[in-house]
Image (cartoon, rainbow, N blue to C red; front, side):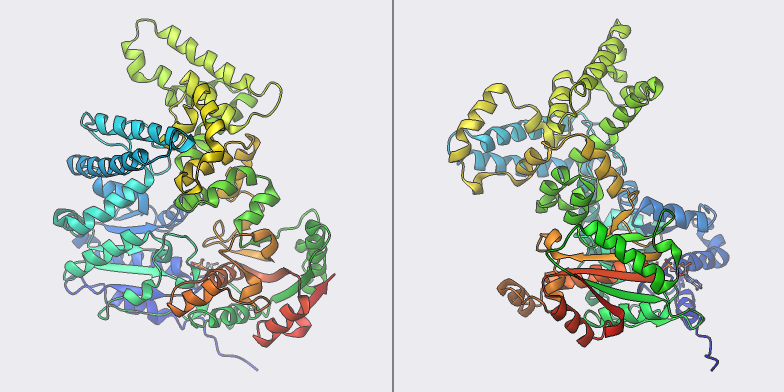
Amino acid sequence: MVTESNINIDDIVEKEIKDNLDFNNPKSFFLFAGAGSGKTRTLTNVLDFIKDEHNDRLKLNNQKIAVITYTNAACDEIKSRIDYNPLFNVSTIHSFTWDLIKHFTIDIKKWLTSKLKVDIIDLEDKQSRSRGINKTSIDRAKKIESKTKRLLVLKDIQEFVYSPNGDNISKDSLNHSEVIELGAFFLNNKELMQYILVRKYPILLIDESQDTNKSLMESFFTVQKQHKDYFTLGIIGDMMQRIYLDGKEKLEDDIPTDWLTPKKQLNHRSPKRIVKLINKIREEGDKQQQKPRSDKGEGFARLFVVQIPCSDKKVIEKSIAEKMVSITDDKKWYGEDSEVKTLTLEHHMAARRMGFDDLFLPLYNTNKIKQGALDGTLSGISFFTNTILPLFNAWENEDKFEIARIVKEKSPIISRDMLKRSKEQSKLIEKANKAVSKLFSLWDDNIPTLLDILKYIANSRLFVIPDSLIPIANRTQEELLIIEKAESQEGEEDKDDVIEAWDKALSATFDQVALYQKYVTDEANFGTHQGVKGREFERVMVILDDSEARGNLFNYEKLLGVKGHTASDIRRMEEGRETSLDKTLRLLYVTCSRAKESLAIVAYTAQPELFARNIVDMKWFVKEEIEFIK
Ligand SMILES: Nc1ncnc2c1ncn2[C@@H]1O[C@H](COP(=O)(O)OP(=O)(O)OP(=O)(O)O)[C@@H](O)[C@H]1O
């Protein structure tokens, strides 16, 4: 039987968007499109169309089209696909927002002054109620001191600085969350800022909108509402792939009725069997369904249910990969030349398996800094990944030039200011060099802990310590003694979560920094939903393992009915709020939908029979596709 080709059924979606890109009668849109539906291709096709049709008009008006994407890699990809045409400003949300606000020095100062004052009043209030001198009160005093210092130097700042990919720890710099908060605040409250945005960019397109910061998304909605006659907001995304914590929940519910809401139906990435599975997974969520391309093969999806407790999981997973060779007849599943992407839904598990759990888990388990720990933007972490790690690598490689470059760029000992003021520059350089040599003497006997390194840097002033680590770095011997004595009397409610988390994380040895870095930059063979955003792989192994996941954010056994709901799940469901089941389902969707050829799901469970029976009842798999491993 010859099936009719369906590969062009989504052409109409692009046509609808293009037809409505009318500068005299703009129409904003939200493009609904599932995994592998070619969102990036649609985006670049739309940009090509704008270039062909509206180039002259835009140039004449000195206007550009803004495109916001999630990562630097995604920016580079889009820029290269549109031949780096300057008509388009393609950037990440952080650099886009910074470009928008950076010249508003006076307003930034005002905002920051009031924020710091509120923070200080709050800290002082807490301090006045603290019970005696203990660790929290000592740390809090240091925080008050550092915020007060920042408040004092604010008035002398001529211009703020910010680097979307850097540490941002100099006196005049803003940090990542401040830039985002400022952007949202200005867009909501300053007509001039709204005007600048819509005047400069009559069209703003946002890719991966489901994970774009909630407050900023809301402020873009506000701008669109107030300037709908000459501004188009185009939102591209897939709500089922929302995996970051600060994205906007139920974004689709806020789409105004006068927007276009085109829907893509095809999945260009995965073969028929995998599209069928991800459709089934999605039935439990927003119920949107996709069609596979008519020219795609059947592909493979298999489920391996492993009874726990079990022997070495790595060995089990290897034997499963070997089984996949005979199931798929694809040798790349196993052996030296294997190319399999193993994905876990959970970071606890990845951290433990890769060996950076001491550093990562305390930070990741702390709500306020979870996001920064995940994406590596937390200033305390980037201090180690962006400064100490490169310096250490240069030291190991005996690369004197690189060491000198890093020190010149980052050390306050030989800052431009210091060198200018000094009569004996060579002495300063010698001091910096000595500080570096002494730093590396910490490695003489053992790998030092991060705390050893931090303390040394604070004493030698070799680099600037980020604010969040100052209370710990500057603790005196005397204070440490008081802390030790007072520890047992201190109530949990008094403690500062973030400092507590850092206290634990800093006890990790330095080798964990490189492992962590490898993981967040997705250089490891072992990935998570996070690192695989927008990516695709021929062979994918997805690991479901609640025992290693530990956190209560995700739970497959609950999702698959092996375990019951907790009272809090039920309450949240009744209130229409998100539960761990929603998150688990979305992560499962993201990971399974990365596969281009074949997919093996490995599920560790104490109740294999029940797990398999439920999954068959839900029609995710048929019995013949399931194998039990004892
Ligand atoms: N119109 C098309 N014709 C042929 N192949 C396509 C088409 N659109 C996309 N593809 C291919 O399908 C795959 C998925 O596309 P892409 O990564 O852009 O999807 P996506 O919607 O961004 O997916 P996800 O949201 O899952 O990351 C890619 O390999 C891409 O080259």
